[in-house]
Length: 468
Image (cartoon, rainbow, N blue to C red; front, side, top):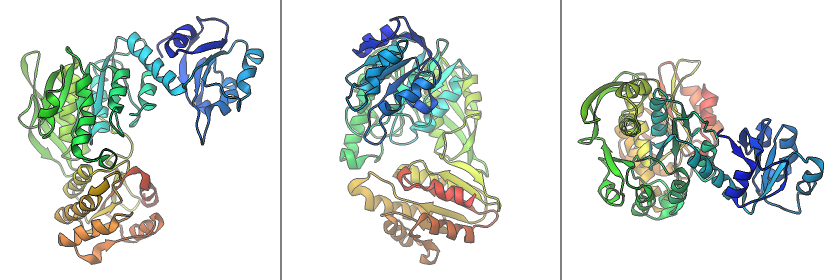
């Protein structure tokens, strides 16, 4: 971590240093989990109804924490004993621990000379983030958000891992409502922003796709002059978003600034294609072979290439980075069962667009029977019935041989599949994950390909572990 002193942090957080040896005490890291605290760390004790970090301050100190940030509370008397028992421990009392955490991230952002890239969008943002980081790792030392750490806690966590020699920081920005992207932009202040697309994720919370677009467009509004905003040329909301920013806009997709030609899928549904883009005024041609399946990943790769090139990556870095990209866990990960079947593990999350992309990937994979195990797509509000019915129709259109549907919306998926021509005899509606596992263990054979996908809350990764 970039060196931060107790005095700097106290001032930045608007806190009160009530214990400690010196304002110049420097911390070697930031910890929010007492179980993984290291010697020299500053431990931030977040309050909570289920797990309260203040109850674990002693454990953090025992593991070597040199400082504590906490909200005072009479329920945690250990806070009062720190000055007497551990005079060398810096105790910084704050009104709100989360705001303090975010303030530390803003301090690190001011101190670092690294170029910052931020990614948001309704679908593909984590994969795009992973691709950008893979490219930039060939350009210089790169810090990237772990998994999809993209909220008011996760984004600051990424900044606490920045070192003095870090050249690039790649973060992801999620949102559950209006104003949240604006808040995250105030912390990250990216040199380049990426909006992958606008879809129906979170429509239950925001009410309409127009409202989702407005919330995502907060990134565009926060981008000042001399920054870059990367937008999807194929998204109908792009023209409306483009006029909201002072940044230089680069487009990706069909007939865009960064585009793809000669797209071919191999038998494992991995795309090879050519990226064409202007770099320093010169047209560059970059042959790409992706190691991850799915034609939809071509668009993710184009967005990543546009972003990486904008902060100084060379065309050769784009080629090498995309060739070696490793997506975050449970995102179209290809696994093989002991019996020789192939699993597409896409259990992290689901939206209508992501479901369609995953089913297209299933159809493109070479193998025996194509089996889809699908659960609910959450937060769709009034669109839930029509969206799940449409997914069933997509299953039929993509030649799914067997369909297992789980969750509250299973009947809609089944109805859509039947209406699309899929025989009711190959549609199963297991009442539990265990029942789904039993069906798959009985049915799966060598060469079969099974897609497992749903919103994270359904826990379908248990099915993947069961059938491996």
